[in-house]
Each structure stands twice: as C-alpha cells, then as structure tokens.
Length: 383
Ligand SMILES: *[C@@H]1O[C@H](CO)[C@@H](O)[C@H](O)[C@H]1NC(C)=O
Ligand SMILES: *[C@@H]1O[C@H](CO)[C@@H](O)[C@H](O)[C@H]1NC(C)=O
Ligand SMILES: *[C@@H]1O[C@H](CO)[C@@H](O)[C@H](O)[C@H]1NC(C)=O
Ligand SMILES: *[C@@H]1O[C@H](CO)[C@@H](O)[C@H](O)[C@H]1NC(C)=O
Ligand SMILES: *[C@@H]1O[C@H](CO)[C@@H](O)[C@H](O)[C@H]1NC(C)=O
Ligand SMILES: *[C@@H]1O[C@H](CO)[C@@H](O)[C@H](O)[C@H]1NC(C)=O
Image 1 (tube, helix red, strand yellow):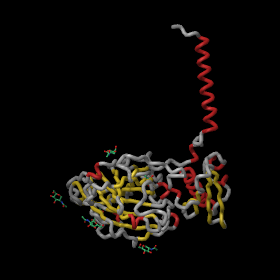
Image 2 (cartoon, rainbow, N blue to C red):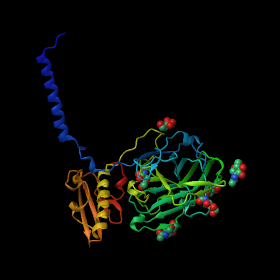
Image 3 (cartoon, rainbow, N blue to C red):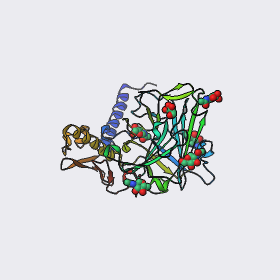
Image 4 (cartoon, protein in one colour):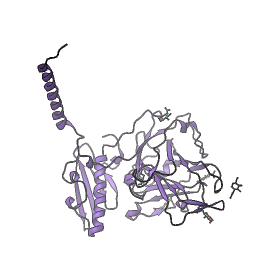
C-alpha cells in the first residue's frame, strides 16, 4: 500500500501539534517541575514490618528466626563520606522488625578478624570495632539516641540533647533497662591465628526509652509513622602480633554507614535515613516520602550556609544573597519561599513557607533544631 507524502506530512504535523499541546499543558500544570537544586538528595529508607501473632524473635545473636528470613536487608553500608569514596573492605547490612514493645535489629558484619577489648557497660565502645545505631524519633535533630555494641556484647547507650557540633552533651546515664542484646561470631574471638567469617548483632530496643524527650513520637509507633535512623560500623586496622590483634598505629579507623553522611560525622541527624513503621503484611507496603522534604531541604541548606558564613565573617546574615545556597533557592524558583531572621548577629532563625499552603511552614535555628508549625509534621506522610 502506498501512503502519500502529503498524508504522511499531515500526520506528522498533527503529531507535532499534539506534542506541542502536551508540553504547553505540562508547563502550566506540572507541580513538580522545580529545579533539582531545590531539594537535597533523599536519604535511604526502609519499611519496618510489625511481627505477626505467630512470629517471635529470640534475641540470641543468631539471625535464624523465620521473622528475619521474611524481610529484606538494607542496602550495603558505604563509606561515611559518600558513594564516591573507597568501597568498604567488608560487607555490612541490617534488617528491622517491630512489635508493641521493641524495635528489633539484626546486623551482619563480614569480618576476618573479630576482636574486642571493652568489657564495661557505657565504656567508649568505638575504641573497638563496633556496630552503632542512631535514632531521632521526632526528627527535630535534638534529643537523639545513640547505641554502640562490640563483638563481646559490651554496650553503650546514650542520648544527646543536641548534636555535638551545636554544643550537645552526651548523657551516658540514659539507659534502656529492658533492652536485649546478643552477638554471634562465626569463628573464634580475639584469636589472630584463625580467620573469622562474620559476626551478627541482634537487638531489641524498647520504644518507651527511645521516645524519651520526644513528646510527639509515639511508643509503640503507629502504622505509617516515620523516624530518622542511621547505622554505622567502626572498623580499625589491626595486625597479628604473635596470635593477638593489635591496632596498626597512626592509621585512622574506617566508618561505614547505611545512609551516607557526606562527612566523617554521624552527628548530623538531618542526613540520616528514614524508617517507616508498618502493620501491613511483609512487603505489602511502599515507603512514602514526606511532602515536606523540599521545605526541609531548604532549611538544611540555609543552616549549612549560615554556619559557613559565620565561620568566615563572625556573624550571621539575614541577606539570602550573601549565603552559599543555590540561586534557585534564593530567587523564589522553588516550591517554597525562604526567609532569615538574625537576632543580635550571633543567633538566627530561618523560616521556609511552602507554596502549597496545605503544607506546614518549617523553621530551623542556629542550634540545628528543626520544627514545623504543626509541631510533629516534619515526618508526617499525610497532608
Ligand atoms: C519480601 O521481599 C524480600 C526482598 O525482595 C524477600 O527476600 C522476601 O522473601 C519477601 N518476603 C515475603 C514474605 O514475601
Ligand atoms: C548481652 O548484654 C545484655 C545487656 O546489654 C545482657 O542482658 C545479656 O545477657 C548479654 N548477653 C550475653 C550472651 O552475654
Ligand atoms: C540523663 O539521663 C538520665 C536518665 O534518663 C536522666 O535522669 C537525666 O536527667 C539526664 N540528664 C540530663 C542532663 O539530661
Ligand atoms: C587460637 O586458636 C588456635 C586453634 O584453635 C589455638 O591453637 C590457639 O591457642 C588460639 N590462640 C589464642 C590466643 O587463643
Ligand atoms: C586489646 O587489649 C590488649 C591488652 O591491653 C592490647 O594488648 C591489645 O593491643 C588490644 N587490642 C587492640 C586490637 O587494640
Ligand atoms: C548515615 O549517616 C551518615 C553520616 O551522617 C550519612 O552520610 C548517611 O547518609 C546516613 N545514612 C542514612 C541511611 O541515613
């Protein structure tokens, strides 16, 4: 069959005009067509499934309960400075479940040299190789919890009223009395003559303690609640000295994390990952990103830029043009309107108002505290 040239051209221009109309409409109708620099990369996320009536986790260090088999691992941990840095020598990943009392955690740490020296509860566990959990249930960056454990089940649990960089003080008196912890080592411990395969950490962390000082977080969480969390693994370089392990002198430790911090610092809660609690059947639900992420991103960008600014100039600025933030953020091309208020040059508060007025207004202070007008809404999913 012969198709005439005219008809072909007719069809083509018909298609062309349809395409044109499509883009014309999209230009005016799209709500997500903001420059990419308006938001920070979204951190890692994981859906934590409630145990069913038939499931039990026996905290014995071995991740052999069927409740573990049915859920997926997190992504493998990467270098704390980001994915462009050297890939960790050993694999690390974790799993989570929950019931009405505990957040359960199972972690796998590939390792040829399992060793540990710290034996006293609340000692500085990261002087040994360790597994660490950081949790900020209400996502405001203040009063977050930190937990560390080594390969002989020595634990350190503490809370920080605010991040270290903001003058926070660690409180080691903070305890989780009903916490359960156990370790399994595939191979001997503290014996440099025999290579190991891995160690696993199994934890049950009580919700009632995790929400201390977080009045808007619920214990146990509700279906769909989201918390900020991150994991890290500290790994020292060791050598075999007559069958015993010794640290290689003058070599810094490696830090491997779930969600990259882009800095050698775990105390940046705004960069931690998200967990979403679910009462649905395993794998039956999707992680949902908070609609407040663009506003949250702007708060963090302004905060970081103010800290850079004061380091150079000795004071904070209320002039957005003086801050090292993307042009789009400064010039109203994003889905929000930022404003900064400086109080006596050494204190500031930034406010970011979303264009979509159904969403709450966000705030950040020079001590890193983040809050939304509807106080608990920084992690809320529903508008
Ligand atoms: C859930 O998904 C993970 C990862 O794909 C899979 O390993 C697991 O078997 C699934 N569990 C169920 C109960 O379908
Ligand atoms: C591990 O430590 C916890 C306290 O953190 C303790 O309750 C538990 O009995 C210890 N388990 C083993 C096997 O030592
Ligand atoms: C440290 O934690 C303990 C136990 O939760 C608490 O009683 C105490 O008030 C905390 N101290 C500070 C300074 O927050
Ligand atoms: C390490 O294990 C080997 C083989 O079991 C044993 O002969 C040796 O005594 C152990 N060394 C130490 C320091 O425990
Ligand atoms: C563990 O402690 C012993 C005794 O103090 C020390 O000789 C050894 O170097 C330590 N091991 C490591 C890996 O730091
Ligand atoms: C974990 O924390 C590190 C350091 O703050 C960060 O680079 C990384 O993105 C965080 N990971 C997640 C999943 O939050």
